[in-house]
Each structure stands twice: as C-alpha cells, then as structure tokens.
Image (cartoon, rainbow, N blue to C red; front, side, top):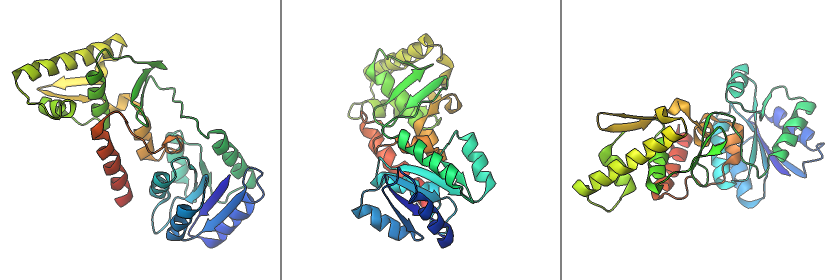
Length: 268
C-alpha cells in the first residue's frame, strides 16, 4: 500500500514515517505537516492508506478524513491522537483505527494489517436494526434483509432515516415520493396506502415502534437504528472506510443530501 502521514508535529510525523517504512505491507510512505501539501499530493498520486493526527490547527483529522474520502473513496484511515478522551470516544464508536501517542511499532503494524484486511469489505454491525445507506439503501433486522411490498414505502423509510430522526409532514413526504404530482385527494389516498404499507412491513419484522406517526407528522426513532451514515458523521473508522462516494443511489433527493452533509462537516 502507498501511505501518507499527516501530523503538524514534524518530529512525530517523521517517526511515524520511519516506522511505516519498516512495515512489509507499506510500499511507499510520504509525510506532511501541511494539510494543503498533502491534498495536492493525493490529487496526483495513488494513496491507499492515510495516518491522520486528530488535533491539528488547520483542520481536525476526522474532517480531513471526510475530505480525503471524497477524493479517494477506497482510502483506509487510521487516526492518531495524543489525548485520552479521543481514545474513549473511539471505543464508544466501536472504532479500531485509532492509535495513542507515543505510537509503538507493534500497535502501528497491527492497525496497518487490519486496514489491509478490510479492503473492499463492508462493515458488519451486530445491532438489531441496521440501515445501509452507502450505495443502495437497505434495512436489516438481525442480519435479515427487510423486503418491502412497495418501493415507495422503502423510499419513505430511506428519507426518514436520512432526516436523522427529524419529523416530516405528510405534504413533505408526498413531495419527496412524487416530485411532479399535485397533492390532490386521490394522491392523499395513495400516500395513505404507502404509509400503511411501511407500517405493516415494519410490524411484520417486529420493529413497528421504529416508525412514529403523530398529528400528521412522521419520524423514525433514530436511536433504534445502527446506520453507516450516522457512524460516518461520528467519525467511526469502519464506516469511513466503507464509504465509496455513493449514498442511497436509487433516490434523486439523496445526491443533494450527500453534498450538504459533507459540506456541513467540513465547514464546522
């Protein structure tokens, strides 16, 4: 693998690069203290692995990882931190690609081996309800794919998951599912059919309480869903490494959301 190491502390960067050169899985490694120089480098050179300091003055490592993944969807990322609170958060997020400073050669080698082993494999979460949004949208319950009787019922759920638990009105739901149709009495009844179909499917799989409908609005209970995009936003390494630049491919509204989420994270 070709690797880059980005750390604003030059001595640590050089030490990390030196250790990487001794790793059998690393073909070439390049070190940078400037994020701009690193971004210029990846525009012209193939890179498969990035070792990123989390706490940097120009941009923190998680936001930098998101930017790099937009340029290099297959890039694997290992975060490096000098602060124990980041390690605690990494543990909570079920992340494995985190290293505490000072870095040991043994730990670094293990993380690089893990990154190499995860190439081209999707993350596997053991949660009760799992939503996959990178690529095509699918929902799984205890590892079993949920089959929807109506495509628009599946799309409605996808949009509600995209909203991160935010509520939407029936009018908004209609405009998402039928962009160019008028919301007349006939279509109101059609929307009723879609909502009922979604509710029935969720109940069939024993997760009916995932969907909440109150006073003409609907939402999903975000805390019940283990979603790759939710993990991605929190900086989960496996989720970042599973992103291939595609988000809910089947839905036209999702391409805009992907851009908005990425820009929001990078501008914080």
